[in-house]
Length: 522
Image (tube, rainbow, N blue to C red; front, top):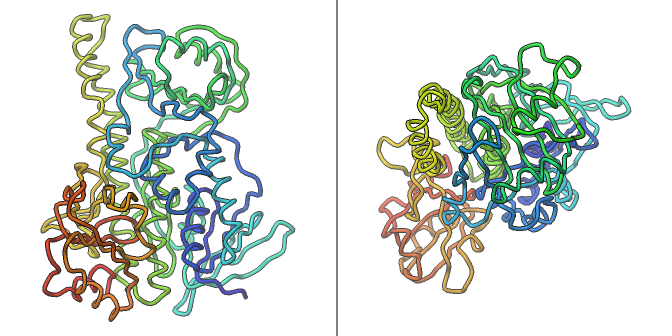
């Protein structure tokens, strides 16, 4: 029975990213992934600036960008059109560029299988990661001494692996989640959707009426707020297309070419590479942990590919959980720190699903029911113009934060929420915004694997002394309180390993040791 510190069930992008996060911290782990090859379906393309911060920290941001299929600098944003893509009513809504300055990295856009390729290549450089492709987890059990996974290899061989912790990153139909008895709930829209992948140079030429964009969203009254959605795979001929279809639709009984022509607003030749189906629903697990076993990514939460939240949320789970597992294994992180993973991440996804996905579908449905150019052209044009003007508000208001976390010294009455306000001010529970240092480096270049204390003309000694007593890894970064750093609004900023602020102030608190015990869950 081989022993690891962590067993990761599922080696898709979330599981692979967790292996990288742990491997860089010298935590021994096994990754069990039944696939030997990667799916070639171009899903999970839209990677946020926050996600790119993780790739930068893992040392593979440049490798990721080198795999992109779109030309460098090609906009990741999209077009929204009414009726079809040849409509006179369209606008190019602002997207994540409106919050770009609050993050250290820019967005990226590439198919999920290429993201996974980069992560697998990084795993291969980490000697403490045992990547077992072609292996399937069969059972997951645990007791006071450890957690156990029985697995079957590519040739039918069986083995039992043991670890301190197991993490299920094995997708929406997670075996791990089912075997540890976690239920899921959410919103089922009772709507079948099609995903078609195709090639067409004629569609590419037809879209040249618009400025360069990566996605094209079509709103139609009869679709009740559900989208028809084109996305570029490359610039020239590769596209994917999502749309609602009637229940009972199969590959054989439906005219998908006619559906695509209707959404585009003109006829064109195309070659299909893939046609598949998915159900429109949001689902979130009732909790993210049972004892020594955790779940992350689609195993914990899943939703339709509206807004690019899925893969990005899964990678944020990894950034949150990885350092906490390492802290517990290294002895300086307590039980409350482990439990805080679900306390922090579950409310974020629940609000994302309900407010930013289901809420957007409901808002689109209401808009299409109230405004129609065939009924009142002038009224519709005014409403459409107002919609275009306010289209960036949703991005601005999506600012996941952990103000209510038990391991954050947040404000009274704070809660963990997907709603927030982007700011350069260092606020407990919120993502740290980048700022330049006097050295010419950015703050993000100096953040350590453990905690980091930013000390701007203030005494860091109480923090350093207390951290040594508790054996908490701490890096101190000293600089002047100028050059943009004064925008943090605090001379001392304590940042945890996932770049979230846990405390900020003008001087060390009277009970610095007590603060440390809180933020490491002890």
